[in-house]
Amino acid sequence: MNQSDDRTFMRKFGGIILGLMLITVVIIILARSLQEDPAGNLNPSHQALAEKRISPVSAVRVGEEGAAALAAAQPVAAPAAVEGAAEAIDGGQVYNGLCMTCHDAGVAGAPVTGSEDMAQRVSEKGIDTVVANAINGINVMPPKGGNPGLSDEQVRAAVEFMLN
Image 1 (cartoon, one colour):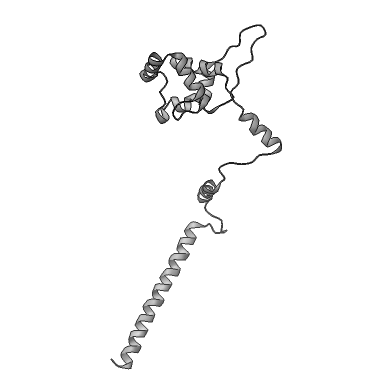
Image 2: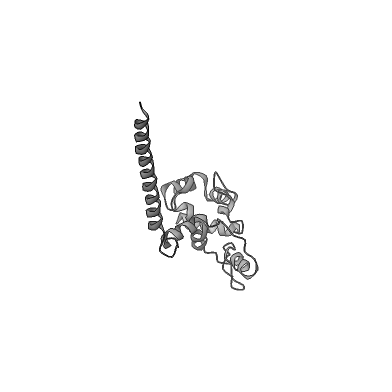
């Protein structure tokens, strides 16, 4: 090989490398122009998705905002009783506020409300045992369905509602 062949090769090789670099720069510019608007802001839909992905899982709330969040998170309370009358507990309200999350879909093996599995458990174990299991927790179900603010009577009312 002589020196002129080397120079020809280096010119062609340099031209190819330069051409590839230019193509790369053009692709980068094109990609950025598709992603941003002329003002340099991100596409609004991309911006919303990015904010959703990086948003915190929880928050610490203080002051009035904290008091409002705490009030909203209070456990389901029994309706106020009329003076002198027996306290009426709405099992449907307790069920709809907490129990339906798992028992409507059968999450983690929870018996589905109104199913034969539910009726079979009651006929085998008795209502008192089923209520005791709901109060104390069984398998993956936490005590009182995860709401320690529920009274035993509210849990019984919810179980009876599920059976009807």
